[in-house]
Length: 85
Image 1: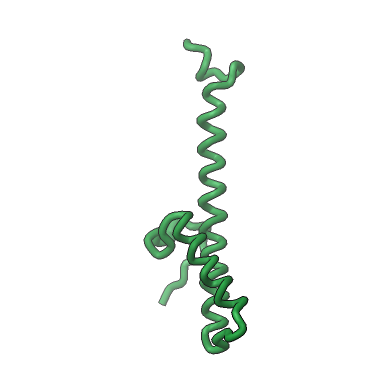
Image 2 (image 1 turned 120 degrees about the vertical axis):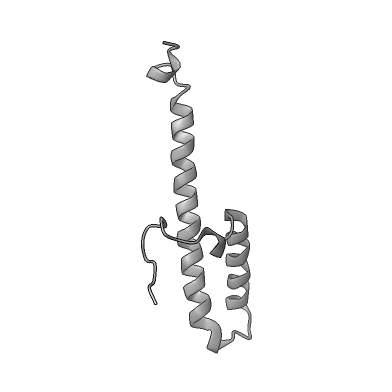
């Protein structure tokens, strides 16, 4: 069984859903971990899943930031793409 530990290129996005879905799942995991009756048998798998979700969300944020920077750069006065030539 191969495990994908790369930067996200080979990850199955459906395993995480969108950013909002991933954050909701993270919040549910956090609430479970903060409860007085933490299931010790599930603790390691919950922490592992949370780690994967955090990495997924960070990747989505980085990708969105780069996309926004590209879009905004096209509209800057000094940008070659915005000079109309």
